Amino acid sequence: MDKLFIPVQGCLLEVVREQYTDFYRDKERWRYLQKLDTKNSLLSLDGFVDDAGNALDFIADEAVDIAETVVNVAMVDRLKDTLPLLSDSEQALIKAIFFDGFSERKRPRRRQIR
Image (cartoon, rainbow, N blue to C red; front, side, top):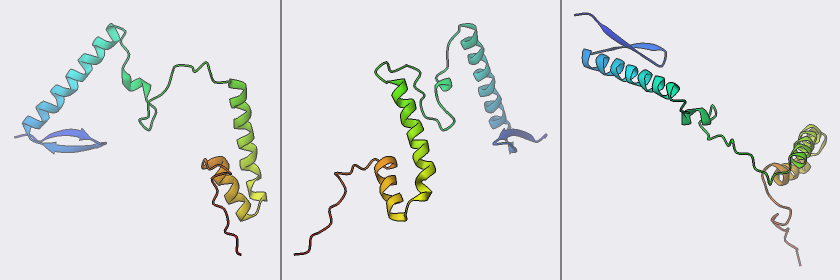
């Protein structure tokens, strides 16, 4: 009896005939469905995710001010460039407020010694 293999994560895995048949039947079914989708101009939801599997948002939010967004991105970039010029405690404070989302009001207050 001949040995049968299927590709799994870039390697060939030896399988029994039933597994081999199931694998290639499923593969052919997938190709058939893709051809139908292409023929009928259907879009796959797989095309709407990034490399990490996160859903992509293709609908423009008209409430967002593009100019303000660009200015904010530029300011954050400049801030990141100047962080090494600050002391360690100043860097930690800036990172907490601007990058970790903490507000200045939520900072724990220092105890007063009476």
